[in-house]
Length: 340
Image 1 (cartoon, helix red, strand yellow):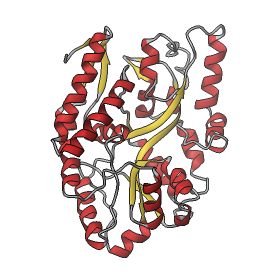
Image 2: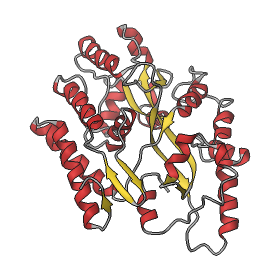
Image 3: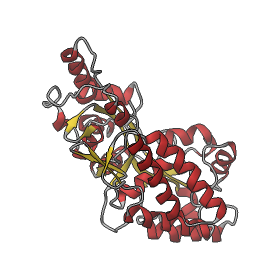
Image 4: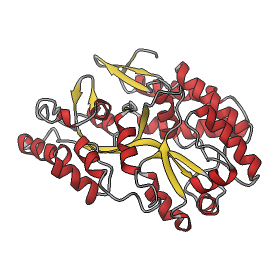
């Protein structure tokens, strides 16, 4: 189950609380990774693969334009301006309104928590101060035409990624495989670095994507199912299968160590330290907390922020409106929400 889906399944009483079943293998995960499947102190799935956020960028073109790889978001803004000056047809990145996972990730990186639950009571933070400051930052880049807000992974975006008119994709470790598929002419021209930081020296980044494995509440063999889940995801052998057969980035520490001996992604064969850097990024990754009505939030976020982009109205107002929609839906569904 994708991490975004898990909270709604927990509310529906689908997964078994496997806290006691997996206590012997929890040390095989970083704290932030295991937190993706832990709610109110209870573990409902074992993480299988993860997507720590990272910056995938055209190293050849940044070097050609004399632009350093940004290590902070302030440097990202500066680099975006230099790209526009170097090539009026190009953008450093496209960050459209429908990418809620990205905005939730960078808000979490800034200290926000879009959902949290304690003792059965939920708190929604889509419009907390950290998130609103993130909204202001990216609105400013868009207003200055320093980033594109056009959709990604469309034929138009794919063509620009191929031609060099899109120079980066702030996303996650799964992105190289996607770019390879849509921009095959650019193999060997991309590199990966850590996601820019809000505060220089703070290496923590959020997850974007990934999934865990549950044992269903109605399982007739919960002990055996939990044993299999532990082997598949947390053992050295199982985590290696996630890497080599599933082609995912393993959530378990052993799988990430195993990955260090692997060849880098086809998109960037020259970056021989790719998996060493990936493991370093993953060790500082913090969870994005999702809620029981993720689907409502995702729909409202895309629609509301896109309208703000089109109308030129404040992005922070869009974030606030999304929170209001999410809270109202949760209250209507019977959840106790602290900031209703």
